[in-house]
Length: 541
Image (cartoon, rainbow, N blue to C red; front, side, top):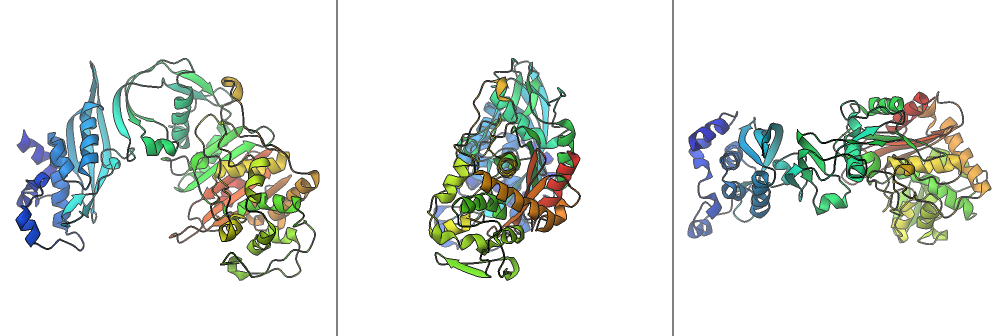
């Protein structure tokens, strides 16, 4: 049996030299005696192709043959590897595993998995692709598999596990606002959303569970609000139904806008009610649109501007400073391309997205002013939204000195996602905060979050005028051309450490619709996220 196992694994491209390395014998014991190890210099430098192939071979052969201890010993975290690989057989009930390596690319080795999942009298084939990376281990520098749960299955995060059994949550059939069925096959972006709906409403919607192979999320994944995920259905359960607010035509349009853009996300909602009409992510593994936590850049100036106007630190038509530079808290801030506006108004600074026009007011502010404005007026950073699926509700922490100043332009510690910023535009358009929701509260009687106050009529009028002017003649004009009607917008770009291009942001409204989007590493929001958001508003009529 061992011979046939080795034959399957060795058949992979690039692994013909496996035999000469002895298959990693005695690796669990360190592969060398203590005296030999002590007398030898630790290995260093780039891995050779032979080291990569031999290490991958050792790991894959041991895993396939059921030698969990041997496979774990070939990794740089034997304890975690042993626990997950043991669970792969015991809890996930995976058997008859065949691992076929592909051609190595540097220190990375892809491989395919073919196996069977069996539960009682029921079994089904399981196939998927994965990959491993070889690194030098600590101490002796010997090559080892860089252990992460994703080696076992790409849907796993560290701390997650695989379990086969009666599903904890019965399946749900999600419906759009017209009663049509929503599926990940037709709307790829909705995969994570449908997982969230099942987790929230599976037991409430009247269905019965089936037998499934599922990813059960660990502590870190749950902290990130990741939902459990079904990988293989061995026997069908009976689904319950959950109606959502999604509009099928607009959802299709949103999917089309992010298609082929792996790091693009967008949300469209009704401003007067909070109903979410469309949500889409170009990369389908994580729901950035609802759960992302990214600096929103200058789109945050909508919130900051409302605060400055309320505090009589700015007024739309009054002169307002926009110098090339402004220093505060030991940091020197500047505008894009170091521009300045001489004798310009606050409206001009907002439309041009002048950073220093906002930073210059930091000396007049208390450290918690922006935090309070975000919470009290825009309903953000309270962690109490009940959308119907997991969401990140924005974060505007209290900061001081330079980070507080940076937060005024959506940097520092401020974090948002397209859902949050669509809600900001919606609050401006409707005049008050309406918590976004995907599942009507009437379905389960839950209470939606509220804000404690609204902007004054004067502040609201000025903010709408500035967003309208930005859409017509400011940084958003190019993207918003042709949108027409009662429209307003704000662009943004957020610098990220070790990232060549900033994240591009755009938030806008037209009529009773509000939308926001982000393209990570997209550059300026007017050129990246702007066309996506504007196209959705046009599609919505």
